Length: 164
Image (cartoon, rainbow, N blue to C red; front, side):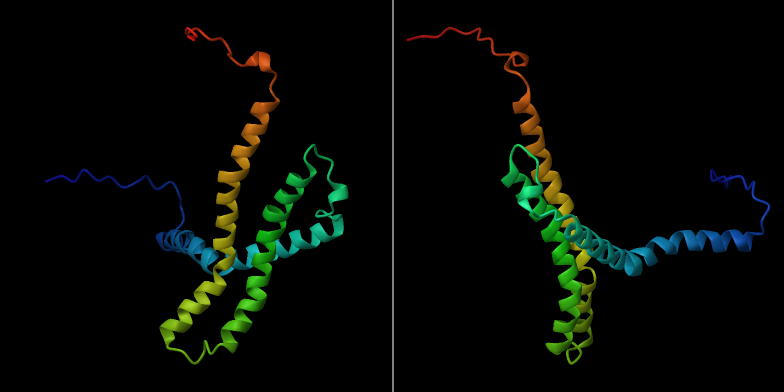
């Protein structure tokens, strides 16, 4: 009985062992990146953004040149400051509080859960910021662009009867 499976054509002249090593690296690098590099990278980027905000005085209302200065400031405070501040503070204080509260005296599974909560918090907070941006800021931007259009672009004709 013939198999319907056909192996892909191998145009690479390298030995199979080198191709296997490349394939394993391709499989395990994203896992390694997610587990070890991504949380630290998000934390480091939050520190850089916080430093840039301090240098540019981004939270100073006098620097906001918008039609709605309070709303612009509120957006900057929540989406550009608060989430980054949570990421920075969570790692700085989280590991210390974990050690002080006896995290290393607890059972092994308790230690893993505590470290997981602290270590992966930057990813969770970044996902929360992205979702909040998607579900809060984008609809508000759509509403503002809708309200800025002139009234003549709206279909305001009424075809029904108005009864008294």
